[in-house]
Image (cartoon, rainbow, N blue to C red; front, side, top):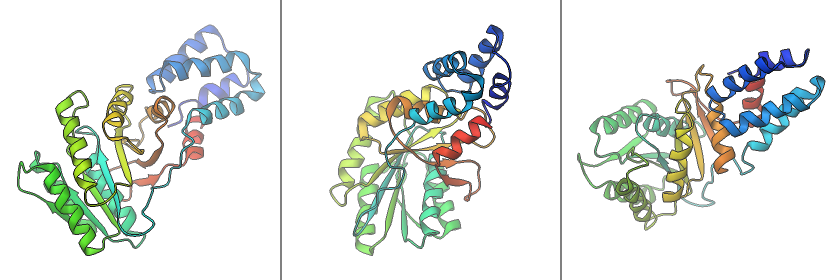
Length: 278
């Protein structure tokens, strides 16, 4: 990403001019850090001694990140259940498959549920991923009740002694209240069978500030426990991850950086900030 590096290098040698600060502000805002974060960093540049600037910026960025655990909450005994939620086009279904691969690589048994029953392509995509990584996928008929498919998947996971159940819910617009209500129904139905350990929101790293509002509405409907940020493969707009954590306090747990199944890593705050400052 390297959003700040060239600017901080320059500011550590010479006092920033008004023109420099305006350009730096523009870069920060275009990187989706948000106006509030951008202004705080600009104030640091104005206030701090050049030799102290990089450390001051690093500490400020760290203070914006969530202090909650970034580990997946797993069941102490029995099934761990994870809901994957988000809007269409964010990489939600691919993220569900990548997360499944993450767990199978640890030797855990995984079952996927294709609950996006209104989009045949989404179901087919998850089934194809399942075949590639050797994970079974529960699916229903086209236009089947998503909650019913989730119930069947949860029941099968419990019956077969599966370690991790991952449910790919239907992508939905956060502005459609009926769709958000349906997501709440899915959660209630699954919890009749087994507790839900995680609700992970998939955030498109190129979405911009609108991604924060999306996450906010989803959290109000299903109480998000974490985020997966996708499309951070070379884009300089990775600042939305930091901005979302600052605004909502929801911890980022995984990052998708490409199309391959291996392009999926746990989020390490220190590494993220280091990339911003490089």
